[in-house]
Amino acid sequence: MLRYLLIRALSLSLSLVVASIVIFAVIEVIPGDPAAFMLGLNATEDAIANLRAELGLGGSLVERYVSWITGMLQGDFGTSYTYRVPVGELIADRIWVSLPLAIFALILSTLIAIPVGIIAATNRGNGGDFAIMGLTQLGIAVPNFWFAMLLVLLFAVTLSWFSAGGFPGWDNPGPALKSLVLPAIALALPQASILARVMRSALIETLDQDYIRTARARGLSRGETIRRHALRNALIPVLTIIGLQFSFLLAGAIIIENVFFLPGLGRLVFQGITQRDLVVVESVTMLLVFAVIVVTFLVDIAYAIVDPRLRRK
Image (cartoon, rainbow, N blue to C red; front, side, top):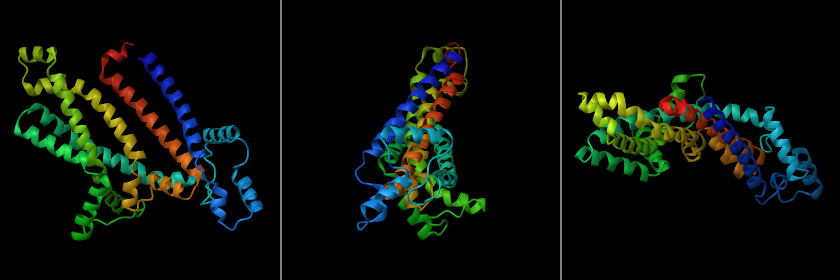
């Protein structure tokens, strides 16, 4: 198992290096000068040059890349061109919105999807199975931002059970969690639809294996066979989807955060793009990529725990 984890760690570390190069290169080739954008159309060449030097935009691409990576390794994400504060402070403020939202949505998605997938798999071909698959197909097809607006219209505007947007901060945990309920539901239901279909397919495939028939022949009931033998093996592909979903929920909630006016990382990236604040976009994107890679590594560890064959490698 140790050798397996070391190989995976090396592979993911190389992925992180490649991702940093790609992110830096893609963002740096975007047309336009951040200094000229900030100073406006009437700025002089000298003023633009001075601001470029102040913002650290001078030097070659290689020098700027090395400076950026070195700074991040030391915990220095640079200074925002727009807010004129360290990017690390912006990330520290915003992540306490995005991270709880992603965890909340992932918990909802998992709690909904796994029981629904099991019910569909154990009743395949029946009316309940067709109904569940139809609903999950609808959940995948409906855009989450459209679903989010429906939630706002029903629960915020019509029923006044929740606020239409905004985040009060964690000084009062109750109102803070309440403000995340609608965004979490809007994010969770499409992901739950995907996860339920994966759970159903994995469990159906597992139930067709020879060792399942052997377990039934030994006198185990269908429920015991599923709990003791089928479910554990069926969870292996489900773990992959859960890991990918957490990464998506953390990094891909830009639209939902804008619909609900949540000051999270997604909205920070969106604002950085519109304001040409390259250091914010680069640093936050790199942090999100790092989160994806860490989650992937944790999923690999979960694989090794669930699948005994990996522990012998």
